Length: 449
Picture (cartoon, rainbow, N blue to C red):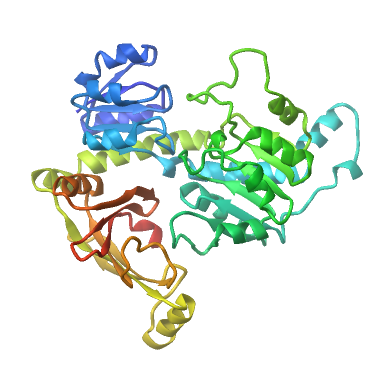
């Protein structure tokens, strides 16, 4: 397999790919057009954020089997078109989630305790104790929007601070021992500190605007380590001025270029940005929340591991011969009036080891690895089973979700929504002839252990 590296990364990425048998070429200086002229020679591409991989690029990449982005998101890639052409998309949110969690917490504690302001004052000969009296995190409610890899990592870091952690996510059933999932309305009623961990998409674009800010019952602090496009900076500044927003920790800004490498090409600063850089209740960093010595290694290793899993394991070789479809039952989901009460009944009378998810049953797959099956009651008013009107939904384990969905689409099976990825696997949905919604799960069982 021939792979083109078009962004610099930790050396172990190239070394790891070469140990798998890949032939790696490096090109960190050619223009996009120059790379397009030779991309047909390659089976794989490894990028960070150097340029967009769009339809014209993909049309020229006639032999491409995978695109690996050494980062959390895939927004620089035309995902739909790539999947349509059978290109495997690989990202590495597992590699820098811990770094993001630590950075978000560090920024918040620095802001609460005026550490930047106090440090600068002392360096200028000022010893102002009362002016730098801090605020404690204990007793606050921290609201997280987007409870995937990054949101979960931040919630984990908050353990021990005696705070209530709640989250809002478009996917139901994401609660865990560190965080309770709530509605957006409840989050906006309770939150003292809001942390954004959303991917780049249409739903998150300009999400934090005047209307969003004004819907919060209490003044709140904002942390954004996700994407700058999620926050309308002008509206954030208005919130800071009128005290609806008490302070902000911003690792990302809407002014960033695609490559995240710089902000402005000239010295003319937007008025809102000028306010931010002079505000004492605003902390800024240059998109480095996931940018640590350790995460650079983890990101590289994650890419190598995923390339190996997709293309070099015995299971993958077998799958190429004959695509495996369903390999087992992954879960049984059903509606009930009171999920918590029902879980308690099953716990007390049938010995179910229940948690926020429901109950996890363990067995082994055909290779002898631990494999989980989920039992989960949902509230009667859930929309998770839609467009099906049935009272239940089955989840089935599969080996290669995206390839299976492509095959099912060719067989004219109804596909519901888009593939979603979490630390516990990939999810897709189809309808059977009776209108039952079926969830297909390419599992990662480890997070349930």
